[in-house]
Length: 103
Image 1 (cartoon, one colour):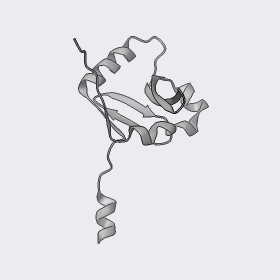
Image 2: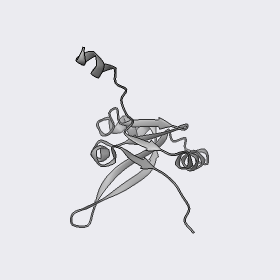
Image 3: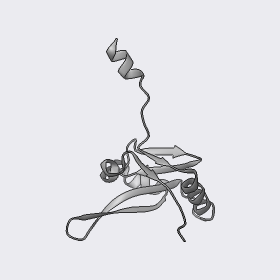
Image 4: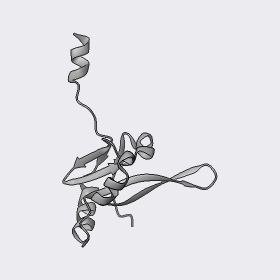
């Protein structure tokens, strides 16, 4: 039936992490002494009408202290986990997290 076909569709990841970005994140996490479990992406208000993306290390204590900020919004790709805070979810759905060096 149509309902069964819809239920069998695979879900897409919130965002896509390229191998370059994953390599940089893994390197950053590896050199921390305080054992973060991944990185988190959020938003903060910037200026009159603007928003800025934030990215920070994520620790288990932070998740325990702020459980409503996360929910099921995370993606694990290329060996790294990126958690997306609920307020940033609609702003990052379908985006690509990449890292490149420009000359």
